[in-house]
Length: 119
Image (cartoon, rainbow, N blue to C red; front, side):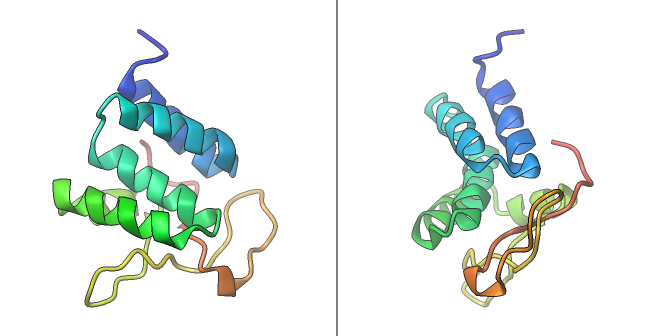
């Protein structure tokens, strides 16, 4: 296996996201997206951006992921990641905490992550 392959970088991004290592997750997802990994990497990066408080980039990546794979929200819900759904399907994230991390103020609208699911 090539550790620089798109699918491995995508999985690494998810692992870092679930661990709360957002800078590392963003780097892995950026590298994966550069290798054209598609909707999974875009949606993963959307959650990273939401956690970092960059809602504009989170919205853009989530919209791009949904355009490629309309079922992407359901797939990520199985991983324990879910955005609130408005009629416009914006990427406003649910307020919550991530495992092992301090509580995040609800005003930041941070994506919630559970330790369940695989990616």
